[in-house]
Length: 104
Image (cartoon, rainbow, N blue to C red):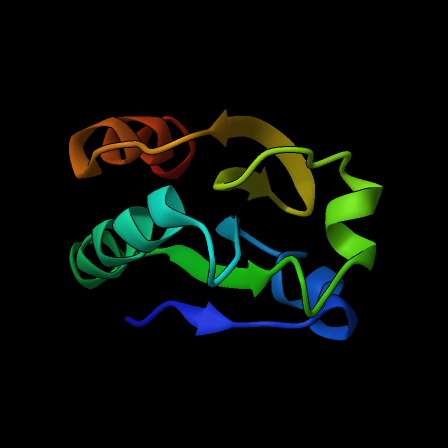
């Protein structure tokens, strides 16, 4: 699996079914650049989770709709509903534990 870059227009459809994790990030954000490879690695090991990322500078509507004020922010959704919101850098183990609550 790979982390798919999505836009405001794709967000609702790409996160509507099952478990998804969206990484809200920006190119100029240092912690975001640290978080990306962690998500890439986790996506290779995790089944039944949709991994997506959204550049907040290119796609302002979705971050605004979810009141995202700091990045990186990770939204975990189950069937389109937000079930977890994580702000700041998180390790692969931390994220795996969060996702396991919704996939097992």
